[in-house]
Image 1: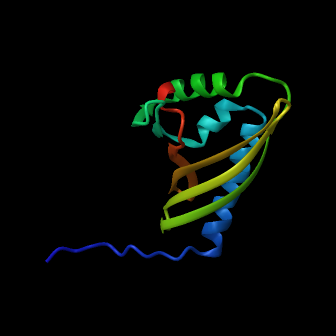
Image 2: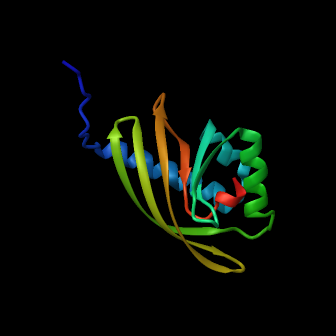
Length: 142
């Protein structure tokens, strides 16, 4: 007989509150373009999943240095803050695993951009960290 783990998990109010707090902190650091602090909130190697301009799915694993270099390039070094208005839909697989779907409006001095992405987060020692980033359109950069 094969043992299958229970797959249904109902998050507690604390589970949701702690995940919301993590994203509030991450958005704040992203808004300040503090890429080093953003990297502190990840587990490396970090998995990235996307698609490329040819329509093919692609993935990569980045170490901290690659994350910092790429995100610094993508976010720029402008002095103005970036703001995010996000709606997040977390799916908790367990108390320590969550897949979070996000619809977000990012506002910069240059204008606004709509974003849709998903993250896989894990909790270790009571602290959430992102381990996988999933977003379409970035595959040519991976």
